[in-house]
Image (cartoon, one colour):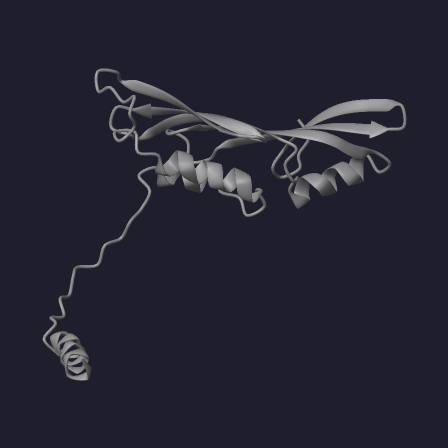
Length: 166
């Protein structure tokens, strides 16, 4: 029994000595829709918003069960509890445009500071973050609609991502 166990162990170890080392070419994986990711990218976006935007960029349209190459444009909606993204893809899987809406996201510092400076005694009750992207633009249009309260007074304001009131 000991000899057979020892023989099996030696065979297992000796088989690794003859293994081959094969060098494979380097593979770089990039998102087909990298322009979209660059346009909507913001370090201050919440993690859930970033993750959903990455799903939109990495979505494999041709691998989707409802894909039909007869149509020029395909619309896909991505949902999370805090928001959604409606994305339009061409028949090759490239992102054409998106419309995004998220509720109660963390506001960027520039937006928080602009609100605090202009409305010092007001508090933020809720907000809506809207993004629209089109493949012909390098920059996505981002807007924050913020609901403010001060006692019995209520107000809604719109700001861009730099904190400029609209």
